[in-house]
Amino acid sequence: MRIVVALGGNALLHRGERPDAAVQRSNIDRVATALAALAHEHELVVTHGNGPQIGLLAVESETDPALSAPYPLDLLGAQTQGMIGSLLARTLHDALPGRRIAALVTHTLVRTDDPAFDRPTKFVGQVYSRGRARELARERGWCIAQDGTGWRRVVPSPSPERILETDTIHDLLALGALVICAGGGGIPVTTDRDCGALSGVEAVVDKDLTAALLAEDLKADFLLILTDVPCVYEHYGSPDQRPVPDATPADLRHGRFPDGSMGPKTEAAARFVERTGGLAAIGALDAAYEIVHGRSGTLVRPDLTGG
Image 1 (cartoon, one colour):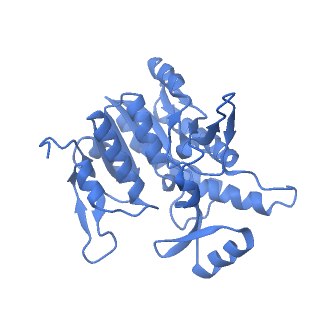
Image 2: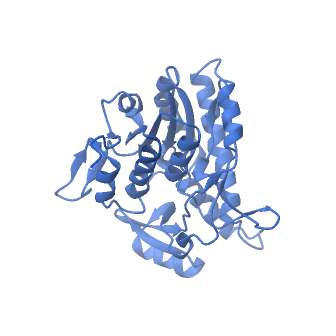
């Protein structure tokens, strides 16, 4: 079975942890353990988030006195693809002896007129207190929004239109490689109508929506979205919270999940299932094997009733 796995950015850097390289190297072992069990039985394509990492690089770039201007988000996204891709490739190389592992820098085409550019919703970087977040917003011109009990920077998150390296990923899979690609949703680019030249844009594409598009293009059988909660919950964080073990795309869309957290995950799962008739699931990293085998997480399946 061909599975596209979308790892949350918190797989390497958990909420509240110091963003040190040693911390991320330590956390990567959990990822390798979870994925290796699947890779022994299935063909894997692994994507990953980069919210904490790109936020860290953005702060460093903004405060570096050697720079005349901060690095744009597309180039910072490319840096995170290299860093996280290397960590994943090295650890999976050790966990899967003899398996070909390829980490590919990947670009995602977006539209210049995407309404997301006027409504930033994508969380990046670390969590701040409300007061500190407001200070940073004034100092650096950031948009901020509440994320749980804290506050974080938000940036535009345009919808992915096409992954430019899809054919290369096909070729690598044909060679038997486990492919790490589309990190952080892919490096966001637009194309010139006249000459086709690519230009980076100041945005972060949602990695779950990119993973759904990639899974569709690769004719994957299963889209597995791994995060830091065991499953999808209705009314998450409220006294009425309840788990959703099984859902159709229509069920998920009626749930009205938050834009900055579970919303893109449920939308990605719904899109993949609707467009392909395949299966998707959302759940915790450590339960990846159990999720694929129907023993954990939220399974998203086609509506077989036609209603």
